[in-house]
Length: 557
Length: 67
Image 1 (cartoon, chains in turn green, blue):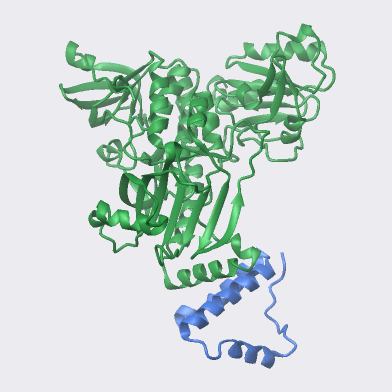
Image 2 (tube, chains in turn blue, brown):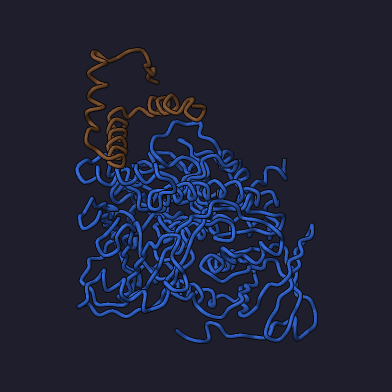
């Protein structure tokens, strides 16, 4: 790791004595704040990123990154590095005592660019994100800058920042609070995140070893080496393994994190002969909670600052990065006055239900792993025992339901279907990937989407001149729509089409996954979610749908 | 939606009652609890219909706290 990642510089305010004025300030340079900064820069918006530390996260922390997150990282220019460094895994196994109860397979599909999950330590991802961010001069990253005051006004937010060289004042049009579960912005504003505290403690250990365990997620209920509790073993990059031991509420967190307590637990699990090195230990409790609203005027809360879940299901960092993905294209339009402020209300309207879905799933997993009542424990144990002999009970065993992207099915930004469609790609759904054939070789559908509105047009074996000129006219709309044309395999029209991006549906999967017929058009939002779709392309309907998806119809109407 | 049947549906009610008691014979209270939970899970899966199960749960709980 290069130390210049975190070069500290005296803030310009402290040299000029003048208050800084910025379109956007982001507080917190964890994965979510970094994604937000990179995304803003990609949309051409400058921001200041404040972080009270100057280091990568200590310990592995978030380790599971889901397909949807990898697609977002691709859009932000970090996907390849994350996937190259990460560990691919598809199989999960659940054990009761020393017996395998069942295993699940995340079914790797070679017809998607990205796998269901990779495992990667949070500090590696942070490093890739910081290096990517430093490629842009639109992000002013300020380390060891701690926010100590927040004063929101109608038209701006003032923040007071403490640095090694003293305090300074800065003003911004919009403030993004990405400062984690103990958000200081939230505290400074006197806002609360409410929910449920789970009365259990977990010991989390990162261990380096040359182990011949397969790259799988292993979860034990009541294993012989740690009776009456659960244990999770999961591999990360660099031969680092994550081990989570459930300890129970009465465990003493200070005692339990001492190496003389931790090492015997790991030896009991791995056997006395296996050498390992302890990298990082933490004892944690968790909560499932969220703020009532994520948008408070010009202060926008993302990630753990806005909502928290238990770690079972990999929903923390994944949902936080998806928050940033949802917010930033809207914020960029608002900052550049291309959309009204009310577009930011839809960040709240879309991500609050997403947080609720995560909290629901996470709470259910936690209730299974840590039963809160006598009756709950009886049913949990009965389920585990039945699962040894009966298929149906295996579906009830819940050691974490792994993160899937949320569909914004009830958002006001969707244009409701008028034409009949089958399948899952309804307005609000995240766009499905598919393998394509391009003149240069292989391509992925997901890579053609995102960062702007895309009109995904499914051509049959022939397209007329009128359709062609109307597709080209999409880029002249006030908020331009970039056409992408999908043709049947082997039927790319002649070179006179070369001014439109054309792809062949290599395995007919785009047509299947989008239930497309010749003439179907999907309008895809900059965050790669479906905004609208029609069986027949109509440029006026497309323009209206873009206005609806950006709330600009409210201004022009 | 399937109608929830609280009219008599058993050919031999006394037989069923005896079987239930017999099922628990010789078990400790803790073991009986386990058997009951397993029985509920097995029956719930066999029935499958979420409306029927919800209604049954409502009937099962009705009035218990007043007793």
